[in-house]
Amino acid sequence: MQTAPGAVQSALDNPRYRTYVLTMLVIVYVFNFLDRQIVTILAEPIKVDLGLSDTQIGLMTGLAFAVFYTVLGIPLARLADRANRVSIISAALVVWSGMTALCGMAQNFGQMLAARIGVGVGEAGCSPPAHSLIADYFPPEKRASALSIYALGIPIGSILGLLAGGWIAEFYGWRMAFYLVGLPGILLAVLVKLTIREPIRGMSDPTAASGDYQQPPLGSTIRLLVRNRTMLHLAMGGALTSFVGYGLGQWMPAFFIRTHGLGVAETATYFGLVLGVASAAGTFLGGAIADRLAGWDKRIYAWLPAAGVLVAFPFFVVALMLNQPYVAIAIMITPQLLNSLWLGPAFGTIQNLAPMRMRALASAVLLFILNIIGLGFGPFLVGVTSDLLVGVAGDESLRYAILISTCTYFWAGAHFLVAGRSILGDLAAAKAAAG
Image 1: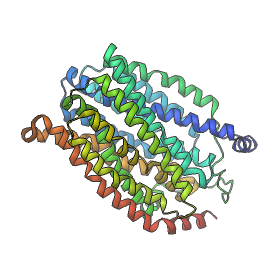
Image 2: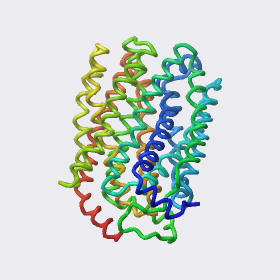
Image 3: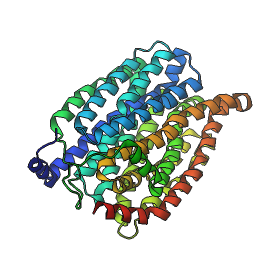
């Protein structure tokens, strides 16, 4: 049930409450990535304890998780476009937090795989309704910045996942790490449900009607979104950037532990504090810079992501080929910032292009594409490639598997550049249709 119009309008006019809503959604997204990414730093002790291969680790953290996460995201987003989005987010948070705690009880690959799938099922109900809420609380000219702030949940959650997982595992074992990061999310779900109000749809759109019209059919909605050239190329650019990002995120800690001999806690600290902060800075700056420069040329929403991924590539190559681990980590600060610039501009543009009643579904379709390709195949294919290269490269197989995956940045950059060719016309058409 939606909040009364007067109360919602009062909340919209109150910058403090709007900031509170965004802050709470960021915290939820932090827990989302904390519970998702903690397995990254725990991959090596889990592999040793349960006797797993790199392929199984990649399947557990990538493809199997992503299939359920992305497929269920579509019906949950469809529900979010007509039902109470705050309730959906709260229920989803309970599910993925509980399943994260259950990961600590796994005794074999099958049980761990089932628990990680459960995490994916819960997390499918987070971002599409959250994006839709943010689009209602913030006007079009501020959405890229607001969604960049929301996307800070990715690096912050990853930082906390690495630090908490690494240090807890160092002293108390990997199972305790899952218990301690999973259970607090249930308390957060209660707070979200009690303190965030469900807004009127479209209340921040200057031309939107208060409208109680029927939601468009699912098939026609997906066709409209997929046929939009800008949306499609932003989605593909984001997916291929995520392919590299998730592959690096999953396997770089293992690479430094295996190849450079760093400890689990030490690796967690460097990757969490140094590289995580760089990713957070890039995520925030992407939306802030794009919104600031959009008055000059709205194509910046596509050009900035393209520049980020193309310039990031050579830095990663140098860092991967060095045999000095601390120098390599220092070099990786720059590309970690650059390859995070795309998030706010891409998601903000998608929300501005999508009709009001399709916004959660628009985010779900975008997340479906980028997570099937990025989250699903990034960690999985790096793991498979590493196993395949063992006969040729020996202990260096993981280094070259990661290096091969970074070449995908050129493909991603091409999609962002193509999106820049159609973005002006598509934004003008969306504005005219809304009016």
